Length: 190
Image: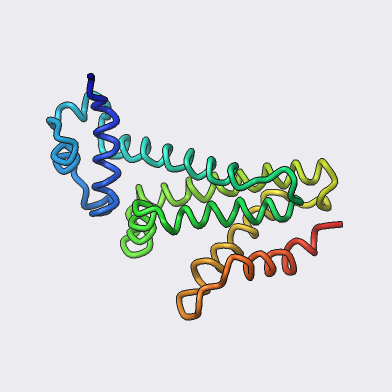
């Protein structure tokens, strides 16, 4: 049986980033966790940044898959949008690597981590924007600037899921759905 060294390295790097953060992770640590020589890492990746980008790409694919799985064609557009957003943000909230990296971005502001946060946010906004454009085309919602609306929707969800519970009791999924429908959806649904 052949060992997939590249996968070992990616898994080890993800583990190291989750435990120590991006800034504190070294290629030596990754090599030790993966049980490979440091030179083996460099046969696949030229540096830590390239390895990090690979991991972020995997996370983005996993997040998109989560959102797609939340969509039920038998449900109304607004319900599907809520379900997809909730799943995306729940994934972010529960994923140990993302938790550590969002914390590092907030506390230290490491440029590579800040770029990762922006890339993930950009991907989520693009996902929402695409869903909004289809909904506009099908007449499910009124015409609007889909990109701005996607940005606002994401920020509202982040505020309700993450910011609200800093000093208050966390909102239940149903309460967030009701708020979404009353604040956002009723303003764009015909």
